[in-house]
Length: 277
Image 1 (cartoon, rainbow, N blue to C red):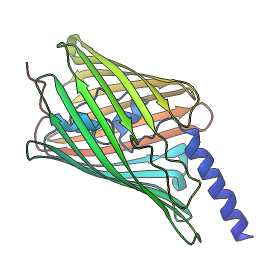
Image 2 (image 1 turned 60 degrees about the vertical axis):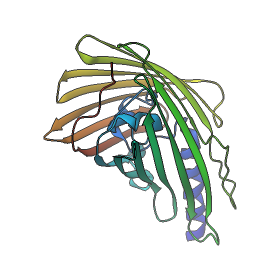
Image 3 (image 1 turned 60 degrees about the horizontal axis):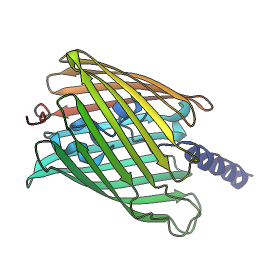
Image 4 (image 1 turned 45 degrees about the horizontal axis):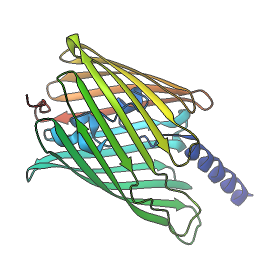
């Protein structure tokens, strides 16, 4: 009886995993923007577009999101940005699930500002899937690539590819999705920003659109909101800064599966670098 229950739970978890069009991390900033993240830079870009961390200072952060209000589907992350050797290294770890079924991803990223207007970055990832009582775990390696450019003071363009090698898990029917996403962000008076992205996920039919808005209240407070399609999802969030620490809250609502609250805490040694002019 217990084995049957375990099997039902595992099948349900696989269904939930494949229902998501975007492979979110526990970065609450990206959760609030509903995935409109291809143009983010600095420490907020950790775990999202690998090129964005090229402008980050030393930082360390942890994140937690409670997918669909079920602790068994929770996702946890930890990350560090380290500006050394002419670029920024970003080790990161994500864990999703519980004892019966869980997936993890360990990543090492490197990003560099190539010119005054262009940043590029790569990630190397190790993925692992653990199913209780399974004789073997499924695992694989993958690579991500991203680039961000800023042709004008107000306009930023970004793109990234996840699983550029189209890797698949060994010893399992679990599919590792490949994704390409492109977007643009426009900043206007007061530092407010509108982000518009589209992506193509190998597990989702058609194009998914993401729109995010970042409202800067002052130097220490931001209000965030977003919407995405396939399935229709809306998100809201806020970021508060205090003496080098950033506290970020978010809540996304999937039209079929419900709410996903998230929280991130990040320490930064200094401000993220601005684009050179």
